[in-house]
Image 1 (cartoon, rainbow, N blue to C red):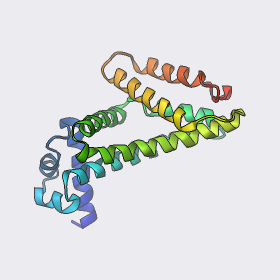
Image 2 (spheres, helix red, strand yellow):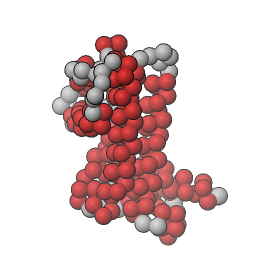
Image 3 (cartoon, rainbow, N blue to C red):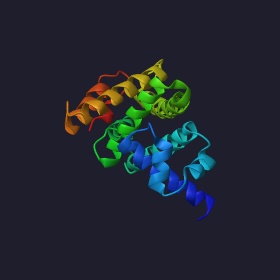
Length: 199
C-alpha cells in the first residue's frame, strides 16, 4: 500500500476510535483498528499530539466542506440566510454531526487536562471556525447596512452558543427542532442580522 494510502487508513481508523472510545489510548487504538503496528502510526504522525492534530484537522475540513456544500446549494440566498444555514448545519442532528460534536467535546476536555498535548490543535480548529463565522457575519452586516460591529466578538458569541446547544442536544436536554429554533432566535436578536435571513 502506498504511503499516502496507509496514512489515510490510519487516520480513518483513528477518527473512528476517537469518536467511540475517546482520546486516551488513541495511538494504540488506531494502530489496532487500522491493523498496522504502533511503530507505523508513530512513523506517520510522530506523536500522539501529531495524530490528534491530524484527526481533528481531517474531521473539521470534512465538516466545513459538507456545511459549505449545503450553503452553496441555496442559490442567490442572502448572507444572513447562508449564515443561518451554516449555524444550523453544525448542530449534531445526524450521525456525522454527533460524531463531530463528541470529538470536539473530547478534544476540549483533553486540551484542558493536558494543554501541552492537545491545546494547540484544538485552538487551531477554533480559529478556523472563528474565521469562517467572522467572515460570514461581516457579509451579513454589510448586506443589512449595519456598521461598526465587532464581527470577531459576534463570531465568538455564536460559537459558544452553538457548542452549548450541541451539548444540550446530545444529552437530550433539547431536541433538534428546538436547537434549530434557538439558533434562529439568537441570530434574529442581533442588530446586524438582516431580516431577509428569516426562514
